Amino acid sequence: MAHVISTINLKGGVGKTTTTVGLAELLAVEFNKKVLVIDLDPQTNATTVLIGEDRWRELNNDGHTLATLFKDALRPQGQPAEFDLNATLQRNVSSVGEVENVDLLPSSLDLIDVQDRLASMPSGQFFSNNPTDLLRRAVQPILNNYDYVIVDCPPNLGIVTLNGIRISESYIIPTIPDVLSTYGIPQIQTRVQAFADNLGQTISELGIVVTKYRSSSTLHRTTIARLKEDKKLPQVFKTVIPEGNAIAASTEYSSTSTLRQKYAYQGGYEAFRDLAAEVIYAAEAIA
Image (cartoon, rainbow, N blue to C red):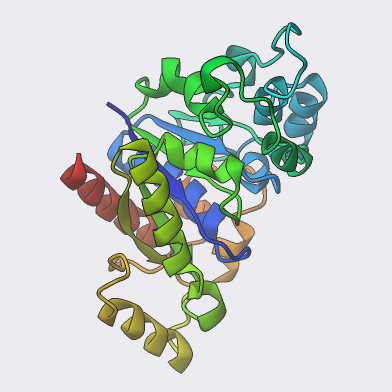
């Protein structure tokens, strides 16, 4: 069975996509895992990091993104579905030569418009058209081809995000250690727990990932201490992702031979490797 993990934060710019991609690449390279990245964020950052903007435009123009899956649910009854899972699934992605075994289901800017319309979609006979179950039904045939599935969710708790949570056994919260970035964590916990209870399933809090960490910042150090002391919050992973030019630049689609080159030997490689090890331990502990 695949371990399916959502990455969520209600605030943008906290390193959510960087964490998603870094985890996926290190799980594949260092731990020999087969990984699927599902990009549900309309900003398409994970998609463009992994396949580049030119390839993304081709796929978007051809309708081979996850937006088509959600648009199908909004088509009048009787119209054929247009989502093609095989054509949408991008295999062996990443601009890094040593990265293999990472696949991608790409996002689209069109998801911005689709989300609001999903809330008013027809329920169908016997309420069979559940707008939060669209992704699960579409990707279920391939999920267990992977060891890990990482779902990059939008910075909200809307229907598209709930589709990602619906297929997940757990979630992580990447966050900058400051007040604004951590403010929404209790809301995420409450909403996910209520959603899981309604489904009758367990969706575990895997942990908080500290990103863009500056060791010289008193605010960062005191915020981490506060997060660790609050027993109502998820655990804080020991590994922190440092702030640095190389990690910031890793969001560009740029060809390199190795992940060490991508992160420019500034500690990013070791951080993502250590985080991947922690995530594996935590995910297997709840399985």
